[in-house]
Length: 413
Ligand SMILES: Cc1ncc(COP(=O)(O)O)c(C=O)c1O
Image (cartoon, rainbow, N blue to C red; front, side, top):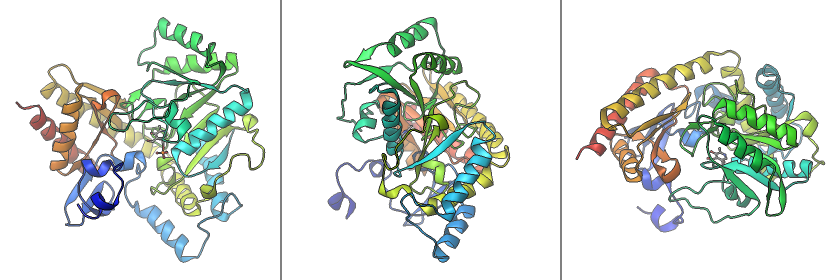
């Protein structure tokens, strides 16, 4: 399809799954240039939790542009950054008793992860990192080297100072013993400086860790002086219900990486939240030209004010999540022959069909029904549902019906 297939690199990926030319979008709907409407159950890989072109944030962005406000500002003081910092403190950090400062980093999740790892190494003096099988942290060399490779999207980064522990759904004594042994070990001659975890794995297959295991991680890392980094790039900002996916556990991270939906509008933005006493960076030690996206600061502050001044969104996400998982359970019973597994929490949900080809086929059949879903997990066997959090219930039911039809067709034979 010209010019894409002729002029764009072979590395392009999502367009192969969804070969339409998209032209406009609103909420959970994307429209292609021929006017065909698709329901979007992928939400920009989690960057559009508040829907496409959320009208509240669009208005904020238009006013920002019309008023000739700053767009780019490095890390200078600006009116928008002030409002963002104050809002974040007042509505997110303060109520959760998190005494943390905001580090603005370059605009991707991977940059936030890089910064977190560098800070941990700076503080502890130890370079080695413990992470988890199935985790994904981004595509820069270091972030890729601590990520599981994904089918069709393999990474060639192999740093040796990393060790991956298995995912833990229900913690056992063996898991605790392995954790303790690993945290005390040396990797490539280096002691462990940081443990990085997605409290609910996104690309790994919508897999929440056992909260009891998260508590053990906190306890053991505190005992050994190892920093805990929560990668909340995909699961944070309300995706699983609460603002942070680890809320209610005792993980109590030292550094939290946020990106994707933090701007509300899908603009490039990433930050780290760093425990105040660990904020030992020297001025300018971690830098980046695009740390000051003022349009994103403005829409982010609006997102926090609009959706995090009360608990309505959180409750709505939990209710809709239940509806999604119940539907997936029904699909599993109708077509899974006992093999399919439903996972996730909030609106980070997955149906593991235990077969790469079948999962791929379901996603294709869904697209034929104008439903956008992606696969993930080890072997790409999980059909992942990341609907916008603000999706209305009719659209949600409609999309789930389309998915059920897609599974029915993909499993018939
Ligand atoms: C948990 C997690 N961390 C980090 C990243 C990397 O973010 P980015 O693609 O913005 O670099 C992703 C992207 O999917 C992610 O899901």
